[in-house]
Structure formats: structure tokens, C-alpha cells
Image 1 (cartoon, rainbow, N blue to C red):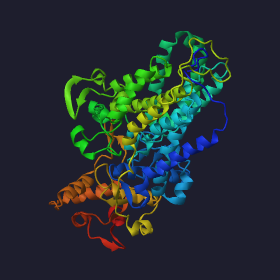
Image 2 (cartoon, one colour; image 1 turned 60 degrees about the horizontal axis):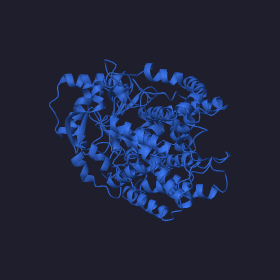
Image 3 (cartoon, rainbow, N blue to C red; image 1 turned 180 degrees about the vertical axis):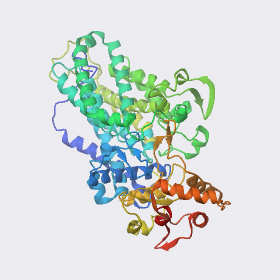
Image 4 (spheres, rainbow, N blue to C red; image 1 turned 90 degrees about the vertical axis):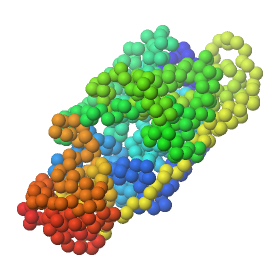
Length: 611
């Protein structure tokens, strides 16, 4: 927060002299690193998906196609009927990334969703690092090298790289540093209206990118403000009125801009109330994970997941960085308010990320964690995943790295005495500055390098995926799917089975609707569940896929298949190449009759059958 009485809160805002070269070098390095992380995709961008989360990868390709389809047909992007036919999907109630897919829709139309996915993923990583660099260099540290280190960690931290495996919404954090800056500037005299409007606009836009990361940022800002208020009560009282006025402007603008989308999310068609069973509530961070090297780093070992467990790697800092962070806090916390605030963030969100029960080296102990005292039926709480609170810890560590590097550079230049803020007279000397210690900068930078080099990201692992049938990509389906009818791919897309067939929709620009899909929607009780409720025929298809054996069928099965096709408003059933192609063809043939071989697929024209 802006405090005119304390030079240690924000060391300075540097005069704008010759920033371009250092800034461009930093941004260029981030872009190169973003390309490097996505390198395995670019080897065959149309034929590869994430090895770790291929289903999520396919979903986000579909989302890019959704943005292009909504813009091309001028349809409401908050809802889609192009999957889960005939009920559709509430896109506001799902991770839809509308704040990205809609502005980039023209590029998606030009290059296709596969190219846009890889292009955006690397760009989002670099953009997040870039805005973090801007925040640090303009508002917290003097050294551009320190800002570069902090920005690089904030953009490419192990937890962020882990989510880059199929979840670009969690690497799309480029607005968050701007939001933090605006929150901390709300107390500036005479600027509450301007800062409030800027903050409100940023918050409103972030809602259409990732609401969960916005919530984490809001919680972090709350802790920062409270920690500041405790340590600077007089300054807090002086700026409280201005701060609250700016916050009111921000909240009013954000609510005005997002009132209808938020209503649509919670009360629109296919909305839901919480998740069935609160499935995320028990996911806490393993204590050993903090000192473990993440899987997708140079020092990481995939085998460690067999010990700690296959979980989100939101911390996984490795022991050198944990040790360096502790040393940095010990050295800085006594004389730096910013470091003390960082320390509070680290402690609060580390504890909060543990979950209902303490986990140690893959074993859930009987020691209760903080979430064991929180009801999983509370609004928002039931949807939160405790381990993701550790992403705030990662951000705090990034800021701490910048502070540590800046302190090393500053002491090497002129000892411990802080420089006056730009435009302010020098403070009265309280003690002579310590003599220059030129060795501090190389030693400090070397310590940071030794802690961070093991965490340098590897290119994200990618796997080949079968190309969609030529019948689909060449438009052979068009004569079979009139307006208002659906194409039923076999297997029907779901969260567990048949995601490759969801890509058929994405790669044709969503020109035909499909049943099933990959989303969260309501069950009969209004609770959120993953995917569409299984129809009897889709359940039969999935069980046959799993067993590889054609089950005994009855007339009731055949009658139900026709009823399900009517429910889906099907006009054609299509089976492409599949490891279980033979038994699936036998099953569908036994249910609705013999197919035709058209191009490279099996086709059942069911228009006459379903009416």
C-alpha cells in the first residue's frame, strides 16, 4: 500500500530512463522460454496433446472453437448447445476462458484450435511473467535483474508449469499482478476514482478468464492489507477512507459489468449448486511436496509421484529453494516491511493448503488440518481445492526472490541505507551507510541460481493422438446432419471415455452438435457432476468398450437405443477408427441395424428409425 512515511514498503518507482533495453530483453527471454516449454507440441501441433492431461487439452481446444463459433454465428457465448445435446452446457458454470477465446476468435478461425492452443499456452506463460516483471520493477525493486528473476518465477513456477499440462486457464495470470498493484494503490490521495475504475475493469475481465485464481488473489490481497494495517496502523487510518472509496468504485463497476454473467452462472440454464460429494475439498498439499522437485523440471523425477501421490504439484519447490527462502526471510524480515508481508503470506497460505488432514510423504496422518474445522457445505468452500492455495505461496516466493536479489544488488552498491523515493527529499540520516560489499551481489545471485536451476522447466510432455476421420474433416457428414439434428459419435464423448470424438466437434468448428461431452452440469438434485448423466445406451457402449466383449442384448436394449437416439435428436451415428472398433460395430449393429462404410468410418443413418 502507498505509505508516504515508509520507504521500505515500495523502495522506489524508478525514473523512466533507458528502460526499453532491459525491459525488451526480459520480455524476449520470457517469450523464448514460453516457446521452449511448448516445444513438443510444435513438432506436430495438429497431432499431439498433453501426455498428462489429454482430456483437458482436448477440452481447451474445444473452448477455442467455441469462442470462434459464438463470434461467427453471433450466439450467446455464455451457453452452448454444441455438446451435451439437447440440454447444452452453461459455459459460465464451467472453465470457459471466454476472456481469451472470444478476442482470439479471428485467429482461431484462421489457424484452427490446435495451433491456437499451443500458441496461446506459451504466450500466456510469457505474458504472466511480463506483467509480474512490470509490477516488481515499477513498484517494488530497483534492480531490473531482480525483477526479471521474480517475474520469471511468477510466470514459470513449478506449480504453473504443472498446470500448463492441459490447463491453460491456470497459466493465464497476466492480469493478476495488475490487479494487485491497483489494490495496493487504492489509498493514493486524490486517485481513488481512477484506481477504482481501473481495478473494477481488471476484476471484471479476470472473471472471464479464471474466477478461481481471482478468488485466490483476493484472499492474498486481504492478507496483505491486514498485515500492512497491523504494522502501519497510523498510515492505514490515514488512507482508510480513500482506500474504501476506491474499493467501492471498483466493486460497483465490476458488479455492473458482470451482473448478468454471474446470474447466468448460478441461475441460468444448466447451472448447479456445488459439486456432488464436495470432491475437491479433501485435496490438500503433502508436506514433503514443498521440498520435492516437480516432475516437469530438470531435477524432477516422475517416479516420486508414486510415493507422494499423483496430485497437483502447486508447490514442489525443491529443498534448495526452500532453504534459500528461509535464509532470505531471516535476512530481510527485520528491515523490510515487504518481506514481513511476504512472510505472513507464506505462513498463512502454507497452513491453509494442507487440507482436512495432514499428509506426509504420501501418507494421510490422523492429524487434523485446518480444513477439518471448515464445513464443506459453505458457499465457495465446497468448490475450493486446498492444495491450490499453495499457488499464493509460489507467488510470494517469487516476490521474495526479487526482494532478495534487489537487496544483494543494493548492498553491493551502497550498503544497507535505503535510497529516498522518487520525488521525495532524502530522509534524515539515522546511521552511516555500511561500506560497500561488492561480493554480496555475485554471492546472492549465485545462491538464487543454484536454487532455481534445478527448477528450470522441461518442454511439456506430449503424446500422439489419432487424427480425426477424413469423413469428419472433409465434410462428409454434412448430408447426414440437417439443421436441428445431432451427430452421435461412437464412443459418445464423456469425462472418462471417448474424448477423441469430442475433438471431431472442435476441429470442424462445432458445425454439428453432439451428445455427451466434457463439462460440469447438474444432476437430478441440482448438484454439479462431471459429464452428462449416462443414458442406458451410452452406458452399454462404455461397458462394452471396457470388456471388449459383446453382451447379450434384448429387445428392451434395442427399444431403449431408439429412445436414446430420439432424446439426442440424432440423425446419424458414426464410428471411426478405434481400438475397440470391431466390438463397437457389432454392438451398434445389433442395436439399430447394419451400417454403411462411407470414406473411413461406419455410418448408421437413423433418420428413418427415429422419425
